[in-house]
Amino acid sequence: MKIVVYHAEECDRKKCTTVKLGKQGKVKVVTKLNQLPTGAIVLDPYSPKSLSVEDRETVMEKGLVGLDCSWKRLNKVPYRIKTGKNSRSLPFMIAANPTNYGKPCILSTAEAIAASFYIIGFKDIATDIMSGFKWGPHFLTLNEELLESYSKAKSSLEVVEIQNEYIS
Image (cartoon, rainbow, N blue to C red; front, side):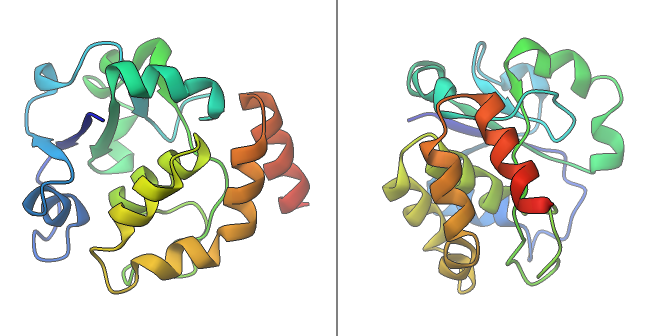
């Protein structure tokens, strides 16, 4: 499956999960927005629509795109232009990466990609993505109950309902 990550080069490359995934050959890293695949699902924390199993076929056919850049910049042009109708947010999860451990919804790019594959029904890909990090398997364990629930949801609306029920 095609996994592409736009890397804005705004982080410490030694700690960057995108750089590590690229070196492991698990993702294609690009530095220009015009290198993103057309029609792919784009992970965007500002998207009003949550990722769900409904997106599985699109990911299989067109791919999955992660955006490794400052969330503060993500809501500005040119990022908004590229995400469009195929943008999806991820539901509530807890970060396990060393930089943001225990913080809700502040996932590394690797965590976001792994969670996406888990939610759309590719748990083996999620496990493979996280296997390259010492803390990676813990992310899946920490969020296992939520990920299982999200992966059983039939729609984006159901994913959001599960998230809201969990948060309350």
